[in-house]
Image 1 (tube, rainbow, N blue to C red):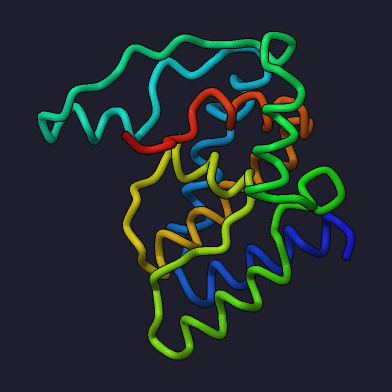
Image 2 (image 1 turned 120 degrees about the horizontal axis):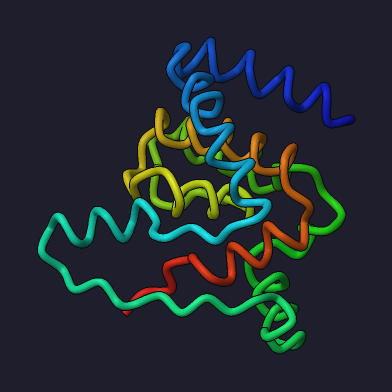
Length: 164
């Protein structure tokens, strides 16, 4: 499926299931995403949420891609989204599995690829709702349209929340 079709289907699904605000989320973030081509984000939505909830926020130390061990980057890609450099925005087998779980009322796991996880970390909450998932899709499409894969991976490796 070519990228124009993916974008079209993402917009149609977002409008039908998530409402116009899902599409507007990605549109409103377009300038933010374009800025990521040249600059590192100062903080993520996860960091802002932690701070407002009174949790300590660790200082972020940005590491450029050439400062990250290739074996570490490869390990993350293999663990999180092994088709990352071959696929478009979404991991289609994982999305089909997610749909099957959602139809049975199971929202326990998401099946998000690297671009989707980056979108969630940067701009969204950790809520497990269909609305958040659709907003994540729309933002991941915007990230993938605007940024090269190596930049998405660099951003992801620097901002993804890995837990305590």
